[in-house]
Length: 123
Image 1 (cartoon, rainbow, N blue to C red):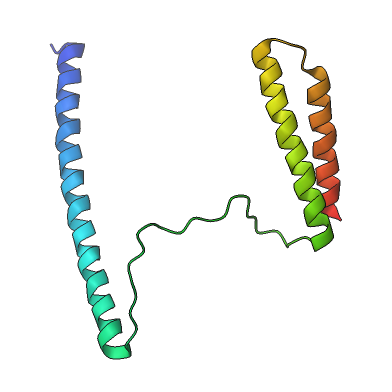
Image 2: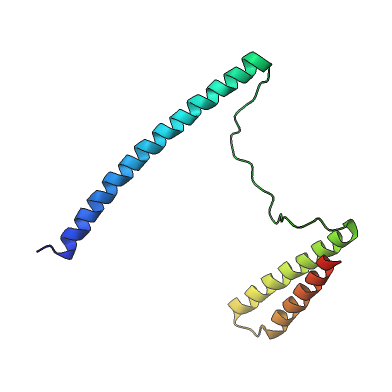
């Protein structure tokens, strides 16, 4: 009969074996892709005279981007201002919660600002 401890040790050994195998496969795949990348880079340079460097970091999407249609310029400033007010009120809320003080009025103000923001985005 196997105890829980024996099962745990067996599972741990299986995990470590699987982890090492996965690591080796990932390294091999990385090297494959790196070689292909270098080959393509060389071909671009030799055949087309195009020098392409490998990016050091992947490009990040800007925070807050959505697929919705862009809003008009006048409301953008208003939306940003309202969002800034909301952020300030949320900080104030966390400060009050930490201090153990009443938060009802700040919560109400946040709801009002969020409604105002929603209306501003619709325009």
